Structure formats: C-alpha cells, structure tokens
Image 1 (spheres, rainbow, N blue to C red):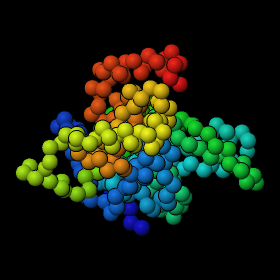
Image 2 (image 1 turned 90 degrees about the vertical axis):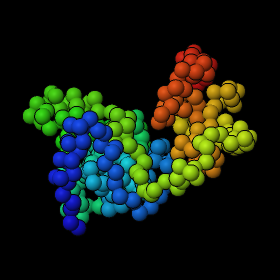
Image 3 (image 1 turned 90 degrees about the horizontal axis):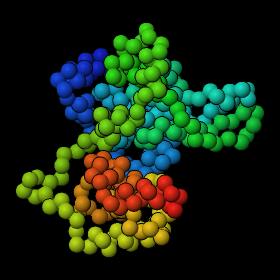
Image 4 (image 1 turned 60 degrees about the vertical axis):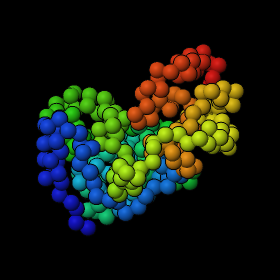
Length: 288
C-alpha cells in the first residue's frame, strides 16, 4: 500500500492558520459511506471496532471513518506481566509516523474509532494465558507524533524541550481539536437551494414527537444516562444535524439540559433557568 505524502497539505494548513482561517475550511472529498444514527451514537459512547485499513486519511492528515472525523486507539491490551497495569496506549488524531509504520508493516490490528471528547476511553486488559479481559475506563494521552504532524499549537517548536512537550500532551483537548477541525465531513452538496430550502423551524408536531421519543427512551439522557422521569422539564430533544424540521428518529437525541448545552452552537442553553436549576440539583445530589 502506497502511503500518502502530506507535505503539501501540512504547508497549506500552515498557510490557512497564518491567514487566520481554521483548518475546517480545508474540506475533504466525499467519503464512500454515511454513518447511521446508531453508529453516530456508538462513536460518542463506546466507539466502533474496525481494522486499521478501514480508517480513512484525509488531506489534512487527520483520520475519518465514513463521513466522521475520529480518534483512533487500540482497546484490547495484552499484558505479559502484572506490572504492565500502568502501560496504556496512546490515542491518535492523525496519520502519524506510528500509524504509517503499522500500515507499512501490514500490522492491521483492530482499532477502535471514537468521537469522545472527554479523553476517557474503554480499555480491555488480558493477562498472558488468561482468557478473560479486565475492562476499565482510562484517561489516555494523545500521541506526540500526531501533535507533531499537525503542528498542534506550534508543537514542532517544542520537540527539543521535554517539559514543554509534556505540557502540550497534558493540556491537549479533544474538544478543542474537534472544534478546530470539525466532526462531520461535507460529503455531498446541500439538498436545497435558497429557493427550495424549507424554513429551518420546528414543525407543529415536534412536541408530540419529542414526548414520544422521551417516553420510548425511558426519560433517560442519551449521553450521560441520567434518569429524569421525575424531572422531565430538564430533558430536551436535540436535532443532531441542526435541521429543526428533520424529525426522523435517528436525527433526534434525547439529552439532559447539561448535555444539550454541550452540543455544537448551543452555548446559549447555559443561560436558561432550566440549565442553572439542573446544575444546582445535581450539585445537591437530588439528581444523581
């Protein structure tokens, strides 16, 4: 397999940054497949296990699965000594030297792709000659080769300074990364023109649809799982693609007001009384 050369692409990204433009302006060509609503949900929760050769490398060096920019790591870890408990894998955000080495040596280990932005990932450890895995949620560090390839926050200037390099890894934020590069890729032209596009507003039956979906999902937040059956006013219905007239079931996430406020372009939710009340109730333990 011939590996792509990203020299020109990285130079273009540097030029975009020098002009004050976000790398998000550098749009990849259409991917071969579209994610289903179920896959989008799994990417945000436990991730999806796929072979390395199914991970697509974009022109800017970042990684994608179908039409979504993703984080990549090896979930299942074999331990040869019990002292290996602290040995954790790094997660990848670009087609760095390490991943190129894996591809070049035909090491198509099964990776997990994820869109989590917390830095916490599911890890399965299996001691040598033991069949059962020990599952845990662990905070992983970003791969330094990835930061170097993307020159994340001028990382290349810090390569010879161990302390500065460690600080860059410690302070790396997946939320910042996704905010800068974007999650969803532009995979096709918009379906409407300025003449044919419907008004982007809630339909008259949206409240009925939202109430039905909340009930079907047992009044739990799709993101954090909190049970709000006794506090229904803090449970919202969110249109994932931003089209308020698209009430297809896969496009509507049922979220607590706190997770609703975390969605892209939704910081205004934090200014509502419902948000402030919810945070206070969680802090008091009344909502667990």
